[in-house]
Image 1 (spheres, rainbow over the protein chains, first blue to last red):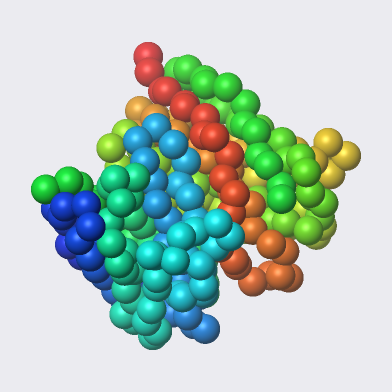
Image 2: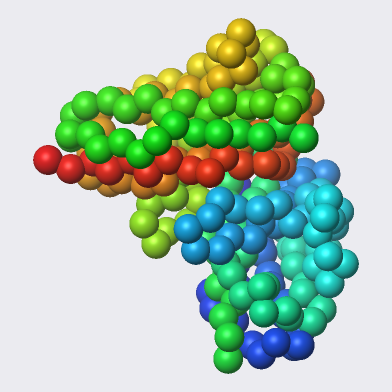
Length: 107
Length: 122
């Protein structure tokens, strides 16, 4: 099983700032089969990024993903008020696993 | 795009079983696989397993092998997740989520159902 770690656990930023979230894998994720999800309280997760760097339909271009192998990054270029949420990475190169999440909260 | 609607909240006794449904609409059921993901209160996401309706094959996370059964009824475009031998630690929101069918490969999850709260309490 591929174990994913995410850092930091919490990121405290102000609207308009840049957010950089990291996801690390215990072994290489084949074909960069990595996704990012956003989850707000009481709601189901929403797909943001798939295949490490492809934005899902309807996702604003301030969200971008990068990385390969064992190191991946989600960047939010300028935080909007609606972006404060928890973000999870997930690999699907093998039996799917999720990272523990990064909470982006308002500073 | 497919939409997923799940059954309502459940309260169960320890040792019993629960069966949650996930009805798909707006797409071709056989073009998707349906996974089940759970989230304990205040915790992260945990993949439990999936069903490939067109093949009638299910795969399970090792942690849940022997305790979870995922099935699909193609005639009603509905997937089911049954979890047995419930304990308090199974209290969680259970989500279904769809992926594009790509043979035996896995894919990202989009969209997700609204979630079903299962509470296990004596």
